[in-house]
Length: 186
Image 1 (tube, rainbow, N blue to C red):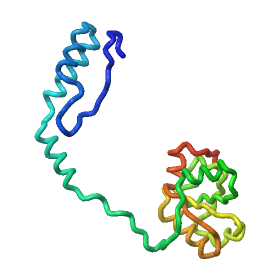
Image 2 (cartoon, rainbow, N blue to C red; image 1 turned 45 degrees about the horizontal axis):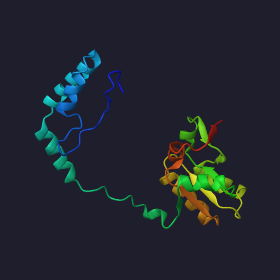
Image 3 (cartoon, one colour; image 1 turned 45 degrees about the vertical axis):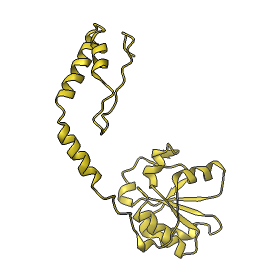
Image 4 (cartoon, rainbow, N blue to C red; image 1 turned 90 degrees about the horizontal axis):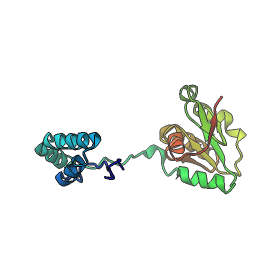
């Protein structure tokens, strides 16, 4: 709300060529007599005069004609299960026994500053060397940076070794995006 009492709302243009900032609204803003109101009204008017509506419409039509992206298919990972970051968070909140393995590649983790709370970093290139340190009686959740190939390959190797292993979809990036707890790494 500006001092004049007129609420200042920033709104995007919608594709039907309607604008929430109407001429009447900008006139009301300019009529406040304030320098700010006048400048904003002038800016909106100039913006609206300079929009190439035919180009906007053409871009919109082009975008509507683009096919949706193909789904990510990873047949090499078979039926390996995934678990969402929200599910992992809920498991931890309930105190469920779960082994969390950070399988971000060595070259990546050497530059990182944090690690998921409760996770242990393990080199994804050396699964056979450290797999024996895990318990087969508790589920294992594996994650990498974004939850694709490295985490899937590591979880698959653990499943092949007899563990109940799943990869965490979205990886460490998704964990941080939901505000999941982390700690300093190193």
